[in-house]
Image 1 (cartoon, helix red, strand yellow):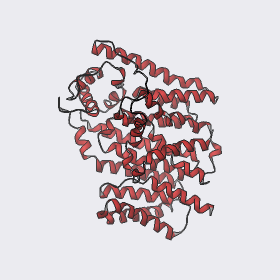
Image 2 (spheres, one colour):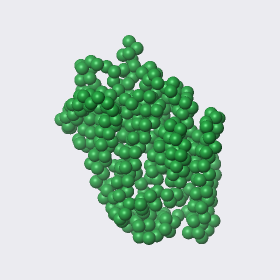
Image 3 (cartoon, one colour):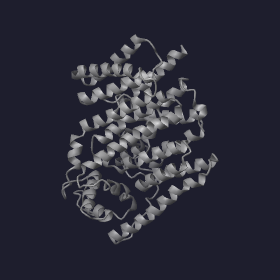
Image 4 (cartoon, helix red, strand yellow):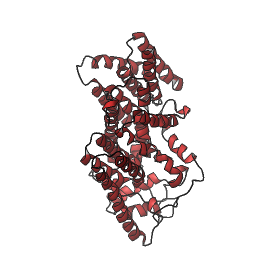
Length: 439
């Protein structure tokens, strides 16, 4: 009975992470990936049960998109066939599945992004655009023509139809790091931003797997971390949301946290410094991480103050350049306050991107958030507890958030929620035995 309940819990995880169906080709990729993941994590050996699970996935997709049943059947059948082929390989089966998940992400991204690619390859025309994402793209094109970041950003915001120029507030201005990273690829065609983001997504899925492997000690369960993250990255790449600088900061944080767990101090410092030089808001959870390292008597914990000091220096220099561009003094700190819309500012960040999951109507990200916190509690290890400041980061939105439009701040913590959430059920199901190796 306990084995049945444990197996059922793992299957529940599979369904909770199921992507929302899109066009036929995209849905087929999602079902193919879900089928592969199912076979890697299930411990049931009943062929009839496997068939029932596959039929259930097909029926769920047909409830949303009833005209694409043949695509779904082919996708699931391809998943079965691929599973049996992989089973003939003596080693590294889960790594092969991870590669297929990443390949599915790349193919799906290209299939879904015609409008995004068109957006990126056309410079926004003065007084015809109105969003921050347009401002960022305009800034990129102005920099390509030789303007400095500060000149370009000021001009881009000034030419925004809904704005009257960049405000003298430090937090209105993004740090220039990611804009200069976009310049590293030769050419003046914005499409290479898309290519760089695809590379970022690949690294993100790989990093999620590596973190899951350290957490669970089992490569098959580590796949769940990548599986849960897949729809969230899928959301970012198929529209202009990929221009949010938060996406470009969060993958270095993933690599840095994995490196901490592996005691790779130099790698941690490099990627933490990079993350903080892209998005300064991460300074808040990073302070929490350093405090936990100190309380946990982590070896050489003082070294991890370096990224924080680096961020402060970068912000100081950033301030000087902004003042030089605007020719006026700027404000640094938003006044701390209890936010007038209360917890709605957290709820909006928990909703951001959740529609990419099949069961989003269940307010799925709230469930995942609680599950991730519970997973950290159940693990009770030094390395796992380091995720706590990032998971609790949204509580600070009550003080630092400016409006419900800050929903995209969810990018700064939801990837870690998605990496950890599935392992709540793997812990309580009793299927993971190797947590004792952590810490």
